[in-house]
Amino acid sequence: MKKTVSKASSSKKASKAPVRTAGVLLPVFSLPSPYGIGSFGREAYRFVDFLVSAGQSYWQILPLGPTGYGDSPYQSFSTFAGNPYYIDIDTLIVKGLITKADAKRYDFGRNASEIDYEKIYNNRFKLLKKAYKSACDPKRRIITGPAYRSFVKKNSDWLGDYALFMAIKDSLGGVSYTLWPDDIRLRKPAALARYRKELSGEVGFYFFLQFLFYEQWTALKSYANKKGIKIIGDIPIYVSPDGADIWAHPELFRMDAKGFPTEVAGCPPDFFAKTGQLWGNPIYDWAYHKRTGYAWWMKRLSSCFALYDVVRIDHFRGFDEYWAIPYGAGNAIGGKWKKGPGYALFDTMKKTLGDRPVIAEDLGFITDSVRELVKRTGYPNMKIIEFGFEAFKPNEHIPFNYAPNSVVYTGTHDNDTLLAWCEGLSDKDKKYAMDYFRVSSVDELPAEFLRAALSSAANTCIIPLQDYLGLGNEARINRPSTIGGNWVWRYLPSDLTADLAKDIKALSRLYGRSV
Image (cartoon, rainbow, N blue to C red; front, top):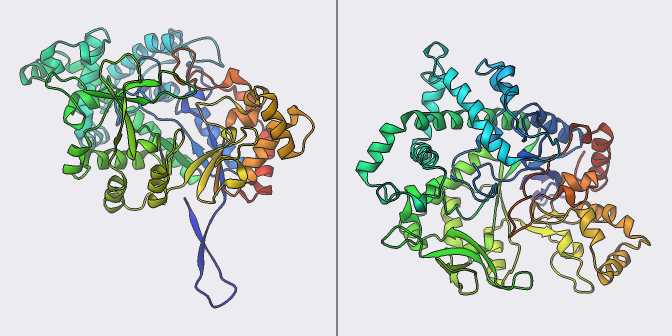
C-alpha cells in the first residue's frame, strides 16, 4: 500500500511509515442508473465526489468482466474484456450515436433498487447495436479513426479471440462452448476461417463494445485518480469454464485429448457444505505456465494493473494449494489437494512488472504454508470483522490480533450486511460481542463493529456502502453456492447525502484514516 517517509527526531536514518487509509466497497453494477444497472456514467462520477467529501482514499469494486449465466462477475466470458453492461447510455446519446427516443423504447427494469438481468440481456445489446450502426458511418470516423485503430492494435492478443467467441456463441443460441460443433470447439483452421467470414459484422460489434468500455472506464478512473481516489480492482484466480480464455488457449489448462478439462476447481467438504463446493472452473496446467515463465499470467496481471491502482487477488490460497476435482463429478467430495506455483509466480511478477500493490485474499481454510506464502510476498492480507466473533474463540479476524500490514473489512460481497449479521448472531456470540464492546443492547453492535474496523491496527479499512447505510440483507450482494437473486442490489441516488459523507469523514479522521 502507499507509504510515506516520516522524519526522525534524531540523526537516525528516516524510517518509512505506512499511511492509515480507508475506502468503500461498491460494485459498479450497484450504482444508480435510469437504464437498469450501474454504469460509467454520471452517478459513477458523483460517487467519486462522494468518496472525496467523505475523506476516503479508495473505491473497491468487483471484477469488471462480461458476465454469463448466473450474472457472477467471477464467471466472466473473458479475463481481459470488459462488461458491456457498464457502458454509459447517456454518453452515447451525447455523442449522437443513439437518441433519447431510442433508449426509451426498451425496458431495462422498473425497480430502481434491483437489477433485472433478463431485461438487461434482452434489450441492452439491441440499443448498443444501434450505436454500432451509427459508429460504422464513414462520416463519423469512429471505426476508421486513429483512437479505434490504436485500441484494436494494442489489444490484438486477446480482442479477436474474444469477439469471435462471443459472435459464435450468439449464433449458436448462447450455449456453452463445450456444446459447439467439434470443428469450431477445437478451433480447426477451416472452421475458424468460415466463422470469421460469416460473422464479421458481429465480430466488429464486439470490437466496438470493448472500445467503448475501455474508453469510458479510462476516463472515469482518470477522474477518480485526479481527485485522489484510487481504484481497488479484483482478479478472480480462475477463468470461466465457458469463456474465450479456455477456448482460445486450452494449453493453459489441464485438458484431455478431446478438448475437455480433466480437473476443475472447488472447495473440499466442510461445516458449511457437506459435499464441498463444485465451482467447475478449469484447473491451470502449472507445469506449462512455469515452462513459459508465467507469460500468460504476466499479461493478465499487467492488464489488471492498467485497469486498477491496487489489485485484490481472489482465492490467494489456490497459489499454494488448490482443490482439484475430476471433471464430470457431481460434487467436490472426490477432489484432492494439489500444489500450486507458490512464490515462483509472484517472484516472476515482481521481476517482470515491478513491486505492484496487491491485496491477498487469504480467506477460508488457511494453512501454515498459505500464511508463509502471504508473508513471503509481503502483500497485506484480509481481515473480516464478521469472522472474528465466534464466542470465546479468539482468532486472526478479531481486531486485537490484526497486524498493520492487513486490510480490514466489516464483510465482503459474499457476507451478510453488518446489520443482518448482528441480528443473526447466536446468543453466545451476541453476549461475547456485547461484552467485548461493553454495550448493553444488540442495536448498538453495528456501530461498534464499524468503529472496531476503523480503529484497528490494519493500515487499510474498507467498508461496504451497505454497512454505512445501515441496510439489512435486502442489500446483500451474493450468497455463495446459490443461483438467482445475487449481484442485483443498487442504492438510490438519495442515499448519498452530505450528512452521510460528513459522518464517514468524521469517523475516518477520528481514527487517523483521513485529514
